[in-house]
Amino acid sequence: MATLTLEPELRRALGDVLGRLPHFDVSSTDDAVACAAVDGLSLAAREPLDVLLRACRGLIAENGWAHVRALPSTGDGRGIHALGHGLGRLFRDLRQQSSIVVEACPGIGQALQGCQTRKLPLHTDFAMLERPPAVTIIACVREDPAGPGFVTNGLADVRELEARYVGDADLEVFRSLSLPFAGRMPSGQEVLIERPIISNPSRDGVSLRFHPSRVHHGFRVRGRPATAEESAILRAFPRLAESVRTELRLAVGDVLVVDNRRVLHDRSRCTLALGSTGVSARVAHVLFVDELWHA
Image (cartoon, rainbow, N blue to C red):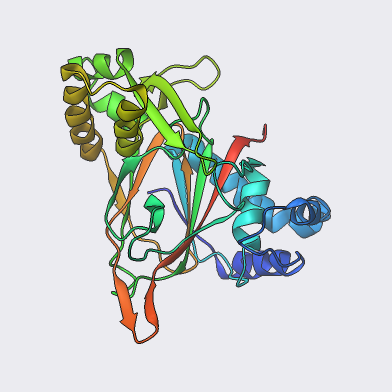
């Protein structure tokens, strides 16, 4: 398992590093001050952060993901932001999202898929973009009302898929048949791209791209329904991906760092707590890293 349990002395040291950084609101659309604060730390002051970053980089390269247990809490977004900025150039396309850090809190009637109570299938974030973000970071801020173990997160690595099904005819179809991936930006503009599920771009090695709702939206945007072959691949691929799926549970303070170009991720259903003033639910903060810094 690619899980990092922080020893008490490192956790305290990371808390000291984060304490040196300015408050960072999760609704912020500008992180210039936050980035400058991280970059302005002396080598000695930021060494605990660099220790964590090196471990995360190694686990992402080896396993496709890293699960960091109990990152020190600051009550804002500076922890996840410092981790993301330390790993690479952040995804800041405000045509696609309303803020740099996205707060996902399930509720009734939510349009954003990550804020819905139903199960999220294995998927690639921003699958409709030419180059989806390199990394997705998910931080558990508040546990589900049903308890800390109720919600699970799943991961499926393309390398495990290829290793288990080497020579399988379906794998060849996943590499050769393109599917339409589409999304609607807040401006109303539609984005559509056609790509195979598994590809081998020259600079990334083998990569994975899948998102059922993006594909179904792609059929609508292109104006033609799914062909028999496309329908077959949409049935076949999830079955194979589920067979290599790894599952874990994020406690409050845990952070999951996922290679978004090689590993699909999902989330089980969520519950709501109902009170006289409304509902409350699990809260997660999500940050995307556009490209990793060169080591």
